[in-house]
Image: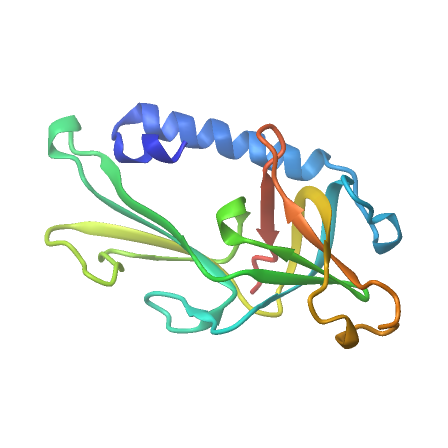
Length: 193
């Protein structure tokens, strides 16, 4: 899908809208998993509070810290009738952790699709090295501490620091949410911030 982002015109927006619709449907139709249902290979939707490991990203144009953000930059397509064309798209942020009760679930940003989140629009190019000419940018971001819903498949990992867990004499495990081809990791954040 990312390879099609450089292509302009109606086909791109039709593809993005169709994909967005499928991801929204996946988010809404996935079974809710509570902490007691966590198991290797379990697929479903989890709800929890998001945190970021390490340094927090900052939302371009707002400067507020966040767990991750998606930046999409558009410019006028003079060859395609004057519409807007996607010229840049990136998801920025480090590994995130979602606290679900007493369990932490980790997710790598490269694994996920952001479908709903607070957003900020501007009539400028918000990239670190902006291009000349008329541009528009949309930033969708997930604030640290926001309540989020994620859909994906759980997998267990052995914790490298078991002493940090409550009952450290047992083999400590943690969970990671991973995606599959037909069941990617989908994230929706409370849009109230």
